[in-house]
Image (spheres, one colour):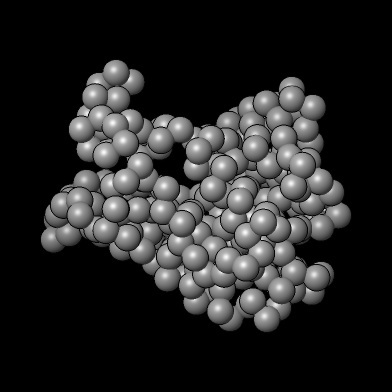
Length: 251
């Protein structure tokens, strides 16, 4: 119960890794606010948390909008009396395309949500945390931002590499404020973004069996476990670190 009496904000908390992390935080005693742009998946996450006896609420927010980012932090504080941990997970995939052919709107959206959204979320989270005794932040980066070895994924690679760089910069800027900031860089993990169009679970499993040294795709709960450790007091001496969790792809 590492997060008893702590308020946790999870962006992109309606599906995939965000939902898995929200459930994991709640199981360890946290009160969890899940934020995102689509209400029904957020409500389902809250329902799943409450079905296990946990405490959760939801708020609509587009993290690429500073007003929304500020409001989701304020709503977390209003609902749960503070903000102690944030998992900035909200992100979008940038379509496969050689960079010279990449649609400019897709490029802009990838940076707006993945990079600017992480910056704006941290900006408002840190403002509260440093005024109230500190806290811990974990950002969602990606192993593609570390190794960059997938042709056609330049837009996503750049956006996620920016998250890793933002994490390091913010960690050094704000550790003196008592705010400890790290990131997690998963490889392929079970969730909506891991499927190719029209692909079945069996086809996905076969594709990743060949691509990942461990021989399988990651489980959402395995990524959530890394997030919780980075956010916990067990990682109190870990600052500005990007934890790669990818079954050996970047080894």
